[in-house]
Structures are given as structure tokens and as C-alpha cells.
Image 1 (cartoon, rainbow, N blue to C red):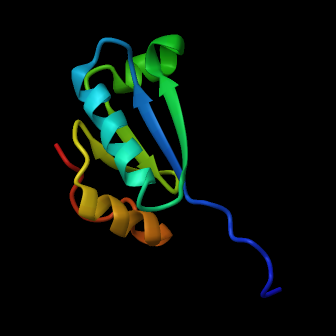
Image 2 (cartoon, rainbow, N blue to C red):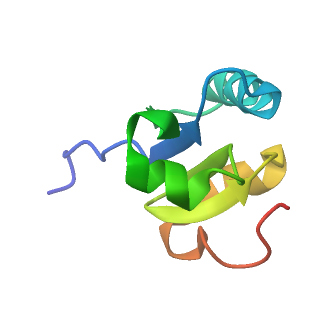
Length: 96
């Protein structure tokens, strides 16, 4: 149907308290949300032993459309591009 509303893209931020890079990523995501609509879920890795083990040395980690897109830092132009292209969120290099 042409009148259906498309769901907002899903972005997940894996983070932890006391992480300055996580704080920077949160601020960037707040700014990006002023430009484009997306759902943001923040997940504290220290609340889940499996996530803690998986991402302990990588936070912040940002997933777009269920695929790992960035770690440590967000490149805004690439973020917007990946947000609009569900099939390419995990392609190319991941910010190191």
C-alpha cells in the first residue's frame, strides 16, 4: 500500500558509563537526529556479561539496520549514507 508509513531506521549504540568516546558518540547521534529520523537504542554492555565480553575493548559500537557500522567514532557523512541504505550498513571499512 502506498499510504503506509515506513518504520524509522534502527540504530543501536553499545556503550558504558564513564566512557568519553561513548559520550562523544551519544552527542553526535543527538546532533544527527536533528537532521534525520531514526530510532536509537542505547545498550550498556556492563549490564550483560556476553555483551561485556564481546565489546569490552570496542565501545562505543554502533549498529545500523542490525549490522555493525562503526566503533570508537562516527563519521557523520558515512552514518547518513548507511542509514539510508539498509543493504550497505556493514560494507566498507568500519571506523577504527
